[in-house]
Length: 172
Image (cartoon, rainbow, N blue to C red; front, side, top):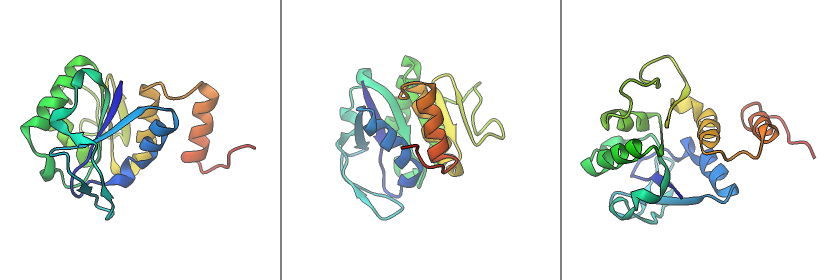
């Protein structure tokens, strides 16, 4: 199963970089796509190569779909909303952070669930949807990783929380 990140010009990579790290370290099949399959220039100035256009993603093979925040006018397209609705209906994990949550909302995925749009949450998972505010990028990574069962056990989870959220050194 594949984990898809939707890239677009002026997306905020810092919001998803820790999650991407967790995915790669656990051997996940991480795929970067963009609407047209072309490189995207992130808000931070990085140019990031897309592996494929969104239309070429086989939705039946998608385990998760991640939408970072940024200038979402660049992805305000029916193809994005249709993709999200299809994945949501299938039960794939859909995760949005910052303005990425607006994309999930416009696709209709936040109806009748708890999200950063429905309550005073920094990060929350309800069913197969994870939403977070920009300041909660560490919690977003951890919550999404938990939903994808990326941690070996409770000790691995607690060590990850201590290191990434509490800035504690890893034990040798």
